[in-house]
Length: 166
Ligand code: SF4
Image (cartoon, rainbow, N blue to C red; front, side, top):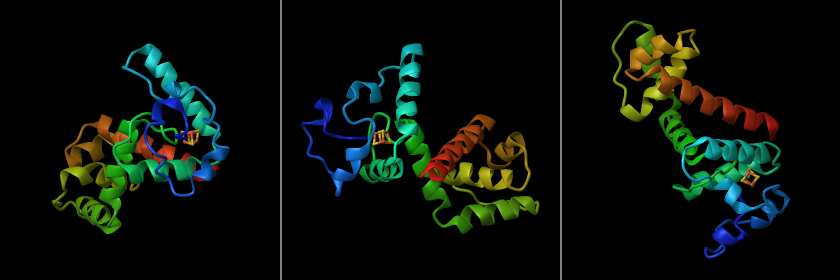
């Protein structure tokens, strides 16, 4: 997200190497596009349009890194909504010591109980999907709804697409 537009101009540009964002296609666009209000049809359309801009951005990974570094940011950054970034952040933290989620999944695969922290549940479920479990079965094993697993899966897919495009 470029920060040289009117809505953010009150804050100093916090990014080191901000000139990298000179290539960003959102530069020069109406910044409101990246800050949808509400959750109705119009907001969903706006999110889609903003994501389409980000999809072709050559600095998308840097944008995501920056958004995650800044923490609790609003609006669309790197083609992800604030909720999607929070989820990604949680997944990344849960997978941080990757072995934790993998180890817990290993226990469950072996039919043994596993101690799983709340924040790690989606990551463990994803590990189980990797072993051929269905979303419903993985969700049930870690105690979340299939919707949570689907969301986590979609977030990881988005990240993979972003990596492929970079
Ligand atoms: S990823 Fe999107 S928000 Fe970020 S710099 Fe590129 S176009 Fe702007």
